[in-house]
Image (cartoon, rainbow, N blue to C red; front, side, top):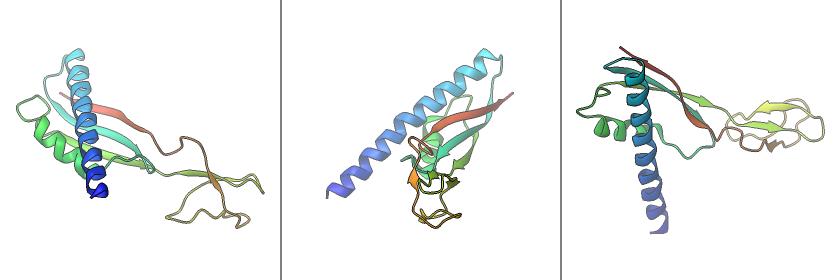
Length: 125
């Protein structure tokens, strides 16, 4: 029961985030003298709690009747970065494997790496 409630909270969190994406895109398009948002490119860190599917679903609903209705969302995922203390190598995490490609020791996550979520670019006309 607690797990289902937690999933519901994440979804509501994504509704707020999606509303902010929409408002930002509309404001930026308006400031640039554009009347229609065509595409929004988003960057999402692998370790963020953002679900692309939820953002797309909320965007479709929230953008109805706005100049962003029908706009495409494009997502770029940023992989988590790890640091190996024994050999000093920094590397990208591959799947669920934390081991260093140089020495095989287990790396540690670099603080705040791959937790980002932001608008990279807005295309409008």
